[in-house]
Length: 173
Image (cartoon, rainbow, N blue to C red; front, side, top):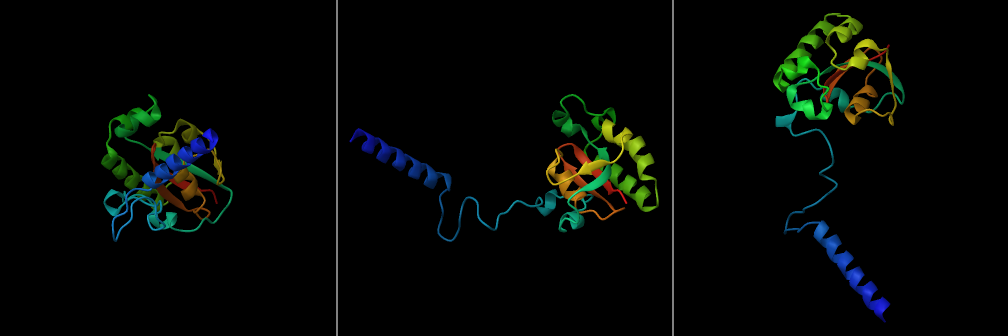
């Protein structure tokens, strides 16, 4: 009998917790997760104009790809770097970083050498001196980086934003 009362009490507690966890629905509206409030890009007012939203909206074109990237950060990201923020990033805010990205994109569109610009401007020490990176859907990279990399056509470049800054990524031809 005690076991039955205990299981009944536990079941009741779980049911209450489940209902409470779903929020309180009001007539004509819902709280909590729904099929329509899926994870997606930030609201328009928070979207950076330098991010390649048009590319990110595409379906992936590759399951494995090789890319190079230029990382541009800013001072507000210092916590993500745990003391390793590039001195150039320490002196700029997000708007300054966006302007730096726009300048680099202008050079690339005019035929600039991606590898040379990467070596000179990337604040990721590894990418500034290393070769191409292999990207797969399960690669140990931030999701924004993976998503953009797998949507780029060979030779194409684009920009994504992560907790580490803006990544200008070029898929190897």
